[in-house]
Image (cartoon, rainbow, N blue to C red; front, side, top):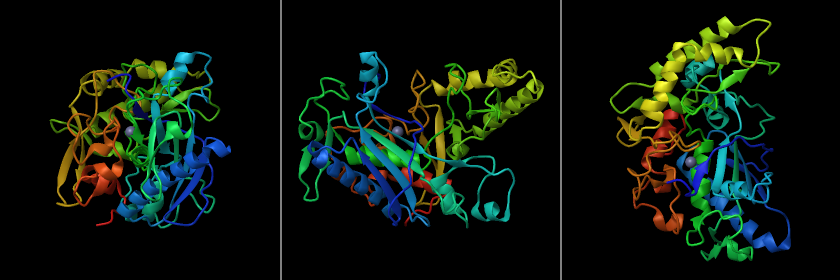
Length: 389
Ligand SMILES: [Zn+2]
């Protein structure tokens, strides 16, 4: 499956949203030349259509703010190596929450909101749950999304006419190939997929130390002077409902690794602490053994992990299989539902691979849930989003 275009996730700078609505879209397109006018207006239309599908499915109590950029990943690549450009251009789009919130202790507000203080919450969700918007009046964006203008996009105008982006831009995709020229992707599909990641559909189980055999539940955190790692942050809220297919919550493993991380922080604290001290202490601890077991038994074994959710229709607990392959794929593994189990089903949207050569409007299952799918919506509801019934 390597070499196929896939979604990826990065942190990205953001700007303030602009207009009052259930969503605020801050839209930026490749550049302002006249040649791109049609391309950019169709891209903006696709972004607004995707956002409308989200605001039809979720009853946001406070508007979410989205920064959207569509630009050439190839032209923006800073590497002198042309193959890097080809690699970077295989990515269709990327998105993530711009901010995460966490609470040290419960307050009246967090208890009322059902917040679990052992996890971090994306700002799009935190502002729905709390009486007071944690971002405050200067809230500067909830989701940052960026899309690759090198790809062969399908886009649709107000009258339903279909356009191919490469024809609009008067070029082929031979240089900076995003996908092979026979496959086009509906921009709206990819935007919708990425926005759902931006809402927090995202696991923080990841080889954060750059060591491919060590799977950590959350990101290491630096000391305030950036001199040393001092432990691990809290995991993303999505992690809370992850479990093994044979019925064990990953929370148990998460807690054990976090405890080992805290112990390593204590033994390595002191004035001589360097960037390696916590790492050395953690790697000598039982936490490392467990983190290696997590990678070998789960992170690189397809079909072993699931995510539980409260089904929005039956109100019963169910689970969905999470995506994993024999190699840990950054940005894909564990942050999507399984690629093969859900291919061609109503749940296709949150697979790790895009569905090509079809418009979202033509691929929507006949059910009333629309393209987001019952599983993804139920997962968002379980995290705390108010889903429209
Ligand atoms: Zn994705």
